[in-house]
Image (cartoon, rainbow, N blue to C red; front, top):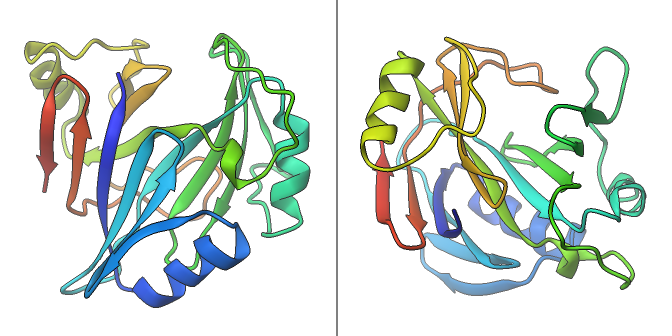
Length: 210
């Protein structure tokens, strides 16, 4: 499935805009009082000012499947890469994918992932325009399996079987990463929390998560 727009909350609106625009070079294509929108390939990623708290999320950007090393070098010149057990990259054998992680100024856990099953190789030099789409968004719930059953009843397939703490729903173009509340995020030293978000899914409409 394809995410057309994802709307997230942040307490760091100005800092976040400067980071994505100036540090990563991602184009800001819309801005008004209390929000701004980034163009991540086929996805519009919108941040709105949070009324309270410090919301943070996990999301992933697909990159060309043949450019993982180039993307990692590009990213590491701009941010500090997160580590897991001393490693600064992940090799997901069962997913046939390679990924790197970092945190933005709002504490969002951001992933660049090359999914080698996809036919999206590129011969262009890697830059911010090489980010193809938002392909994952974390959905935090108290009961993962019950929520996944609800998604399946609405026509959303599980991509992998998962477990009581983690189930990916959708496909490699768009995955809802359903995780149990308080589960530690991979490649991060923080536990998952529930924050509001909105997703516009091609052919499915808008889904609101609270």
